[in-house]
Image (cartoon, rainbow, N blue to C red):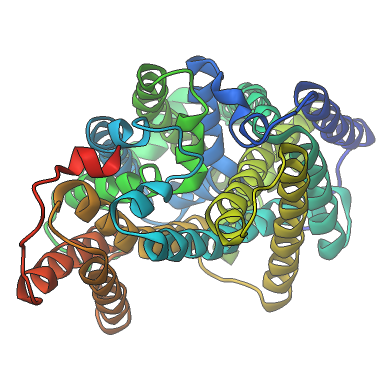
Length: 502
């Protein structure tokens, strides 16, 4: 089946106008940056409701909008992926009670400053570098998927599509900083959810049997199954336990130690506001996942009814929703929904660039300088770093387009997140719950965690949601045991962990 798509000029115009409007809005909102706190953290004055939407929009991206519907739409697909959202809620609660109090004890710019306060400079730099590597790799995959949509919609070359999206995101992030990013996230959340609901409604109305017919299709094909209590750790499908435990550890790692998310909390007016935004975001994500998974089921029923080959037969799950939008949605609504696709992508990409620049400047570049740097020069350095990471992500996305990828993008992105952030979470747990563990033992534990997780990933069939749990627990217990066996063992001054982190 040919996946070429011809978009109506009206819809193409809407997409182009939207991209330009995002750029203009970002530049307007982010004007007046004077200090590094303004640029990196929005002056620590962002409203919790806007932060809530920014958190959800940042973790959504095009991967959720396009790739997620392909999971239940596939043969034998169902709603079991939604089980991981239950773990996401639990993980957020753990962050609120364990990690947020640590972050708000001092005016940090990054998550990794906590590790320097507790262990030393090496821990901070190591985790920050790991964040920069994995964050830019996974978000380059997101940029690739979004550019793929732009390519098939506007008929542009894939490389041109990557560069166009990347440049627009770089410009408003570079100029406006965190304030521009966070407010744009809030607007883009509203846009892409309206687009998703509109598309869902049109799929239902376009089906021969309407809602009742789609429900009958879903029941006959066991598409509405959500809970699976199988205890298998290796079966390549989501279960309740992998979703609950694996999802909780994954969220505790990605939302509790990843600068992309921690930067949101540090932009809040207070710890209470940060807790509200993070806590309620879990419920919003659950509902959002449910919407996109139900869209996938509706698409499967829709394409089963129509008299042409099913697009899923060729394994194009990531492109299925985009194919429907361009070929079956009414003129005007197709353009608005495609604009929603780009809204989801750009909210994540802009956050990625801003947080990468913050981590690089605050954790690596400024601490290595022998002299103080003025606020204007810090702003300039932040903007240069933003542009550099943008160019890096564009380059990786172009390379991915040249090489190609066969697995669902959402799985690739989550695998990277779980593999990289699990051992980092273990370090943070040692910092908070291992008051007598010192930096050498903690870093050796980190090496054991990364090595052990690598061996598990390569040598076993462990399902990817467990990666963060395995990596964090290996790091934590290895660090504890290594300290216990080291000269001096657990002997330490009577200084409390609260004093060390203050």
